[in-house]
Length: 613
View 1 (spheres, helix red, strand yellow):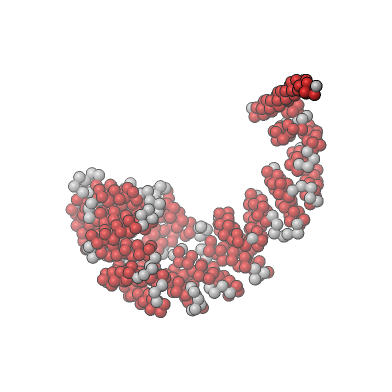
View 2 (tube, rainbow, N blue to C red; view 1 turned 60 degrees about the vertical axis):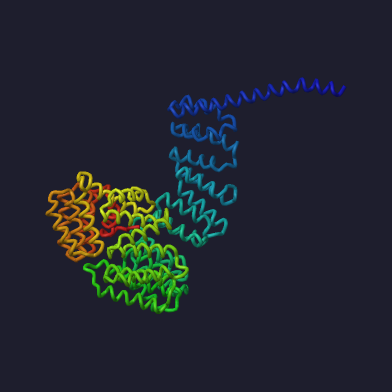
């Protein structure tokens, strides 16, 4: 009997349930279609049709989240503020705890020009945030979405006060100030964030580097930090950021003064000053580099950084000597004495092995003592547990020296060893480039090109650029010359220049101008002559030749090289900043696609006094 009743019930209930579900499904689909249709009318500008459908849909609470933005925007944009208020009041009855809808009510008052009422309403919302009715972040974020940034700030500050944490929401506030271009307050809040989370110092510095792009902005931050340090001299963050600001401004002298004070105040053993000195060296400010490392050596003679400081001090002096033409061999010998003294004082370690390599290169390329250089480099290579990259660099150096003394087979053997050992690594690419140049010097241009074609795709920008330039040089001067004789002669003179046989190179270049008069290689000859004259300190004569390349061969591959080098000579050798600025500015117009464009722009801006990152 019970089974019979259950069967009767099932036979009656299941069809009813199925019918009910089918009806609900139809209704949902109908609502979906209405929403799609209303949105279509809205998007195509048929606002009255859209409004009628939205009004019908708004009677059901579940439809509101899907139509709210479009419907409210439609009402306010068409001036139907009364309809908008009726609608929003209905919405708030359905969703009284959803802060976005409360903010939208204030926006309706704002849209119709009732600013006072809108502000009172927004203040009421802020008060509810204070009492815990609404989430701080959600409220502030919606204020920001609606571009009411002042109330986003108020919301975060109320939250900060409510939670009794003066650094709370610092990152969020910094972002608000960033979006509203209030950079002074942005800086203050990022620093508040750092105080709460000091481990994020690099993140904040990187953010400042991206956002504070004008010199005045960094100077403003500098002034702010000075004031803060006066108030709180022992606050490490202010001191560290002040050093950072001076580094961004390339004011290495001031950065050194601040770093020195930092090290004394926080007992860091000269570490911060060391960092500043290395950055100054990398930025080629050798004068301040020398000052910084002389101080470190004197102030911290027993520091772990002592040897590194000595190394950088001598390296800074070395770079100064090597970039002052003509090069003074007396100064080169003084550098070697200093390097020797450091090695004898400290003994062998990773730093002094690097020092010995620098010393070997001075012997080889500036004092014509190749045997001594080979001896030192082999000593480094044979020492136990030497870093493999240092060994590879020393082998490349040895290859260069064997090329200096006319033993190219030894050179290619060493280059190939490094190429194999450091395959797909920067040192491996460097070795391949040296092999390509060796083939070029020997007049084997097809083999050189096979190397260069690979190197043009190298990950190192410097190596790929060098490969591209050599490849263009070969192609430009061999495509119309089936014998390649002019290019082979030029390559052999280029080798003489590498071997520091300047006088012989000049004589051969003069002979080439006569033997190949009118040949397309003439601008290349002028180029080598200009480089030799530059190294001999004959700057005016060098500029005359470079100017001939620019004016007589404006469309050849060396035109931009020559013009850029002219700018450098005026800047670095003749100290005529005005003329060098004129050249760099004109360069950017004449050669916008040149490999030197970025560097020319940077040099021009630096000479003009702009902030360069």
